[in-house]
Image (cartoon, rainbow, N blue to C red; front, side, top):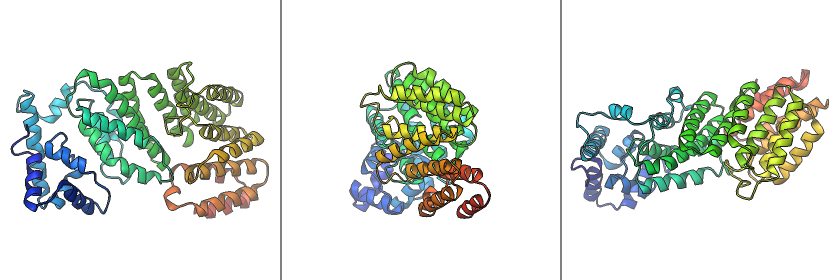
Length: 424
C-alpha cells in the first residue's frame, strides 16, 4: 500500500493526465537528461514505491513531469513518513536518528571525499557509508546484476564515461542501504556493496582522483569485512594497494599488499595472484629487488594454478594478460629490461583492442626500459608518439602519472622533448 500523497501517486497521476505510457514517460526523462538512456523499470519502481527517487533525480523528474522540485521533495518525504508509520516507528523519528540507531556496516572516514566534477557520486558514497540496511529481492537482484555488468571493465570506454554510467546504480545502492532488511540478506548485500564500491575506487584511481579512490576503497573494505568474504577482502586490499603504488608511495602499497596476501590465504585465487603481483611491484619500486623477485615467483606460481573462473577477463579476475602487465611493471622498476620486454610482448599479444589504457601503460614501460638501456631518444620518441595519439579522455590520471615518471627518468634534451609533448 502506497502513501496517498506520496511520490508514487504523484508520478502516476501526472502521467495519466498527460496520457503517456511508462515507456513514453521514460523517453521524456531521457530527453531531459540529454539523451542518456533511462530504464522504464526504474519508473515502475518509483510509481509503485518499491524504490523512492533519490535527490540526484529530483530536478529531472520535476522537468519531465512539469512540476516543481519542491513538489517532488514533498512527495518523497510523504512516502518516507508513510513507510515509517507502516513499520510502527514513531512519526517524529527523523531519518538521521533512524540511521544512527541502525547497525552500521560501512565506515564513515571515507565520507569526507569528493568525486571531481561528477554530481551525485560523492553523495552516493556518503549514503552508502551511512549503514547497510534492507532491500527487497528485486532490488537486490538488480544490484547483483549491475555488479556483474560493471565488473567487466572498460571495454574501450574512458574511465569517466563508465563512472557516469554507474551513477544511477550508485543512487539505487544508496537507497537500498537506507532501508531496514532481514538478517538473511545482510551478507549478500554487504558483498555486493564491497564489489560495486571497489569498482568505483578503481575508476577514480585510473582517473587520478587519489583522495576519492582512497575513500571508496575504505568503504569497500568495510563492506567486505562485514560480508565475511575473505577473497573479496583480499581483492579490495590488493586493488587498494595500487593507489599508493601508482602515485609514489611504494611502502604504503607494500603494506596493503601484504595484508591482501594474508587475507587471500593459500588458495589459488585471482585475489591471491593479484596481491602477489602488486607486492612484487611495490617492493621493486622501493628498491628491494631480491624480495620483489620472490614475489614475482609467488605470483607466477599462483597464476599457474588458477582455474578458468579465476582467470576471467574482468576486474575481479586475473587473466594471463593482466599477469604479464603487472610483471612488466615489476621488471621495469627493477631495471631488468630483457625480462620486462618479454612480459610486454606477451601482454600485447593477449591484449584485445581497443584496450587504450593498457596499451598506453605498456608503451610507457617499454620507453622506460629503452631509457634504462641508454637509448633515451628512442624512449622519448616512442612515448611522445603514443601520447600524441592518445584521446584526451585518457591523458589524465594513471597514464599521466606513468608518463611523468618517464619524464623524470629521461636525461637532458630527451626529457625536455618529452616534457614539451606533455606540456610540462
